[in-house]
Image 1 (tube, rainbow, N blue to C red):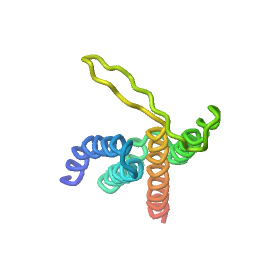
Image 2: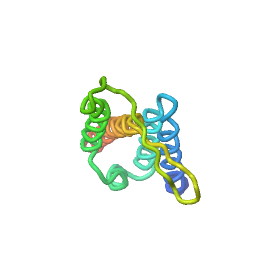
Image 3: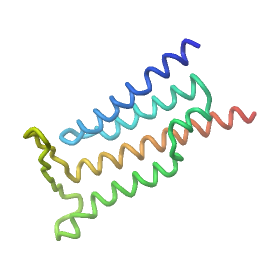
Length: 138
């Protein structure tokens, strides 16, 4: 009962931290990978505390779909510069004005990191949840 309570409280904290790591990786490499690992750890913690069905319900999307979407985003982030006549994986940034005078800078590296995030989350979730389901079947 204690583990279930702690896992329920840690889920939003871990997911928020994973998003922080993802967005921090825009200027530093590895944000999508480390953020995806933290998000997968949050899902796995729910599986350990509850069961596989609860973890799948929290994930909401099949892991294979996450994996496919992540690969597609990463590929698109590399191929988009080719449409503009530039080399593969060339960075482009757009600056959006936010209320209050703040600005948000988004770019193709962010799209690539999001793709990596989804791939890591999908692969880790697929592996662990499949193993857990196989163990429950026995």
